[in-house]
Length: 416
Image: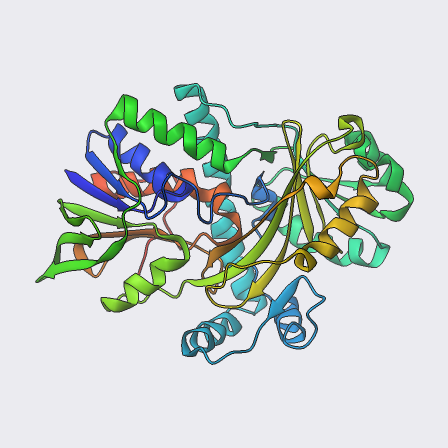
């Protein structure tokens, strides 16, 4: 078939790769001048099945409400007149039960584990590299109380297939010498040995080039999706700033904008943008930096080692489609990073960035056919889009081809 994919982030590019590998003629429409220049440009760099716990939970509900008035938290809620945010919030609240937390986390973990294998298979099959490190990820806690309460979700994931090791501070520093200087400030943590790290933008740049050169995928950069030309139960064409693009099927992978497009055509797609902040800094002294990815669970900051660079990521801010940032937005992030890795970097050399995560209320992406016979979704991957993108792309390609997916589709296939 001739298939048009909307969006050249990590999700859309991975979908295009798998669809083209199946023999389809694929065109990707992207408003930016290059791939991975939106949400996928600068995430935490973690490929992390260990981070498969859904956001919506009884604990998250309390933090969400506190975020309305305390903007020093990792979660910030900027109140504004936004009916879509109100509707999304009500759906989020309905997911904040223990039962929904467990169910959503199971689906996320299933896709995340599968997707990690898909990322590694793509790298092996194509020869592309992306500053990857396969040393695991440490999720650590600063107090005994937070360690005791915070490991519950990881133990649940372990019961459903995630290998983990609960570690004390001595074992933690043995695994990550970069944290030796703050050993006494950390109570312990969780080590997920199958987790890994890598630069998603570099991965997408290289995968898009491979898909174009080897598989014939056509990328239309600098082209804005203006709408869909629908006739009856089918999408006849995608209307763009460069004119109509016709084909046999369309895939929506537009990150946070997916919900905006879907709503125009009666598709129930509650994707809402959640802003995150990152800083990418060259390491001045590599011996003082981390050797693997990690997350300071008490300070709500994640980091990864990308070659000779340090990537920091923090904050979940509900502020609509605002992508702006200012130096003060990074103050807490830098303070935490200096505490963890003193002397490793000069924050004045940091490349600062803010982007939007496409969040579903239950933290589970939606994949599959939606309302129209030839319209598919592959979107809503939230804060672990880099982790789940390749698995969802392969899953989608199986659905398009009419093949039985390699993983259980329960909870993944779109049903709106």
